[in-house]
Image (cartoon, rainbow, N blue to C red; front, side, top):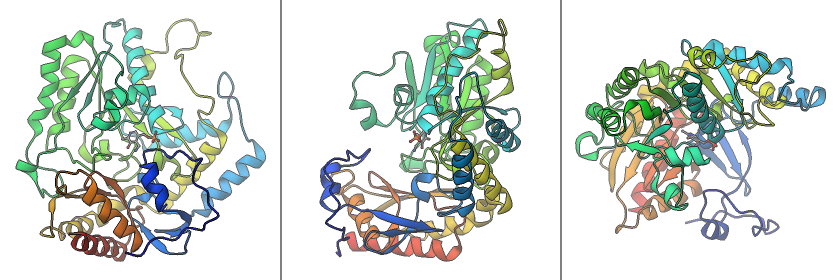
Length: 442
Ligand code: PMP
């Protein structure tokens, strides 16, 4: 295997990398130096196709000059404006533009800087909303096994990725989880949404029976869990979750940090599945991955319920120094312009079928135990080698990287989500490099 060459001028001791096996990585760092369109270039000058839109965020592809120019202009005019009790016009424009593409009613926008902050913000809004409504007993938060909601204490607590939780021992009290829907016995190699598992939404009824609806504030789920390698919801599952929430006055939060901004061939997963949550958390694609930014889309009823009390008292004691940062707003508006001009929020719909068939053509290769797809998301799952979870997946990932394909790995699964500008020829490249690597590593 040809090892990726890095210049020996790069010292790797000081940077403590996030979500990375630091000691292993630093022996043979995989480093990018530039990016354009669908490709990265590595520090040793090789082109690598981007199979995961960075980290599910570079939806319009890399190197968009329009965004760079907007950010530069903004920095030269207004580099920062205080976000509390002061403002700047671009923040209002950006919020209006987001409201225009939001699912019906979800048009009150609270800005953050990341997916993690959006999640913790939405959970806190849920608690504050119930208090404002005279239901202060609703404090319980419910997540789902195998969910990923970022790394804040709220998001880690409602999250359901075992390693992320176990490492920290103590998380928020009053949190429960419903079961995940990944089911290789009934649904392996299902195309699009699996047939079986809608009844798993009834776990929520069991928690209502156990604790009482009057104690439950909100349920948060990713419509399609991404970080646990793309688990499309069984047919009818999200509808059922919505019905149970409605029946018991529980807020439903969709974490659309990955699925937002065109990933499924619709602006949001809420549009794709025809289920409207009470809040949506977003980030990533909101600025095409350029400038850190996130937003909570709250339903008007949630927002309006909190616009009470004396007018000179702030309604929500929450926010960030960099909420609606001018550069983020500039980048975000330029990003929305590109999405609109190039029809990217719906482009996935026209290529999803090709994507699905290409991925499923890998069925039958050695150790492949599942293939999943939904919109322009997809995953290939391998069986672990000798019980060592992630070892075979790691070898395939490194082999792909050395041969010109990057994607996000999760255990022995490969999560794929190319930029929404992807052409059929890129899909062919992705699938052929991945297929060869799977065969070689076997
Ligand atoms: N929620 C979901 C569904 C995510 O996929 C992510 C990031 N992968 C987050 C939240 C956290 O976002 P960030 O890393 O920007 O904090």
